[in-house]
Length: 222
Image (cartoon, rainbow, N blue to C red; front, side, top):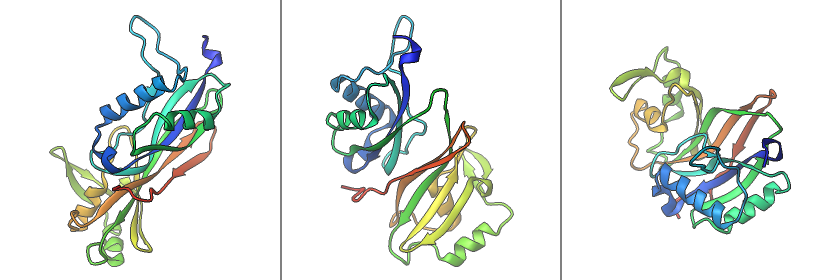
């Protein structure tokens, strides 16, 4: 098949329950096996050892639940997004559940801008709104990552209380980003009683549109 008979598809899925403890490599292998069992004609790389053209824009830390994981595939245009999602869902194990997808325009690329998280827990374990405002008012928010000091402030797009949880949006950069735990530590919060779930991803389309894909899993630990 020539390149012109494929189109780029993004499938969004949950990673919850026991699947939280699958490594990124394990998830890649699991999705690849599911695609093969579903008999979906995903495009392969060329050369002596062809492999499925499959990519995951971001990697999730081991043990964290997510409602907004993304896998990017290339398939012939006669396969609808719904058909791809449903056939893949039938072959994936519990905890990896596709819930949506998009077909990109020819030549369109989406760049990750932000990762969105929801932090929940007992009211007395969450940082107070005053503590959040004080942290964000600082000129710098120093933190240590891999033995080096980084400034968290330019990596925080949004941090605010929304009802019973803390809403956090972290800037994604290929050169480096931050983890929710970095901000909780800067707020002097104990992370053990808190639950952090990734709930969304914001993309920038090469066609100029900013796109957010968000999904909150009902029972992230189940």
